[in-house]
Length: 396
Ligand SMILES: [Zn+2]
Image (tube, rainbow, N blue to C red; front, side, top):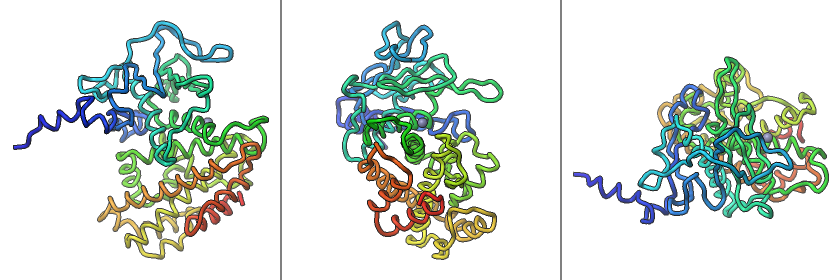
């Protein structure tokens, strides 16, 4: 017989199990998106004995105002003082994965866990703690999981989350939207790693560069969900370029990260709008993940080497058909090896981004200079793929 009581015992706080961190539930995509109705169990790095009700730890605290709160706007800034809803509490085992996903407390737990998860992922790439860029003023990030506002914002020392509206008038709390939270924390990570320009943030490509990289932080963070990776690969039978086609016919509505990243915009096709101008860089990095993924499939004998001759930037039915011919049967037979290849491609590109951010001159960011810097910090196959993709996007 299996001794289940011994396994249960490992989950108690303050025993050896606490070194694993703490369990939370996170929706990899918004829960109203088909296929994502169930949250995934995720371990965040803070152990149960260092997590308090709220939840809060030494980096982040959630406070949920009882009465309507207006969005922060200078000079009204954190910390929030006022009456709060009862905080989210851990179960008797010290973990937060037993909270009812329909409850108010779940918003608090989900918002906390999403922020902590994104930090964990990027601290893992860096190999060290990411200090908050506002650490001189505030020791911790304040997270407001719900305000009656159809928007979300992150500012100096805070993240506050309202709701998103769909065309039918439904309201979806941003506290359950991992993509939006990861994008906002992405900006915080970039401010921490790259710094703040000494002059205006409107100089050069600073603002669109920030948007592109916050989107990439969100995309790469999403690609750390086991269920997210499985669903993505099954959706396209291992041919990531099909996602571009699916985006066009809006089958993936809700998968904003993929929709934004697998775009086909070149610099000559975008306006000066910050989000529009960010698209070619985001697309070039997504294409580089695809190039690396293909290279790994061929190296692992999961596809014919002819796959490497097919361009990843320009997608049409002929190209999609050729790629599917070279990958679909192998994907059906060996899906987990495809997943390994995608994970490796994701990590190679994420590490290249981290190197870029560490070397940027934030006072003078232009996409062309950032692309050249990224090339100079890379080598071999990755460098060749980046050069090809930046050139196609007219960034180089
Ligand atoms: Zn943004």
